[in-house]
Image (cartoon, rainbow, N blue to C red; front, side, top):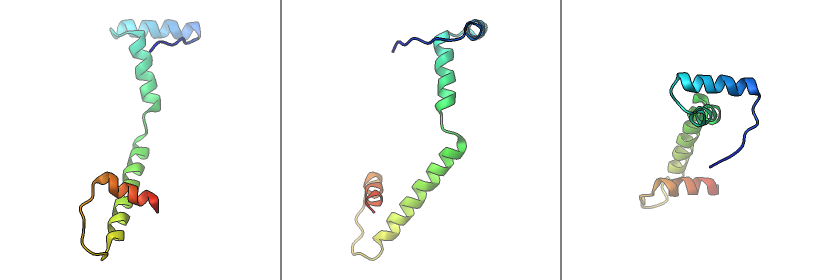
Length: 84
């Protein structure tokens, strides 16, 4: 996808020099920089995993003694949890 960026000239010059020194393109340099900025932090990843685990445990507890246990796909368990 093409886009236009209006960068300060000193930043652009430094970025071009860096890209040349590291044998990459300005496009790849910008893409990698953006990936680093928008990537979730380790804390955010851990919090999301903990939240999913807690929701899964709660969903399994809700099954309790409601009769026969029916195997559910992961998505079905999460869907049921979200309905609460």
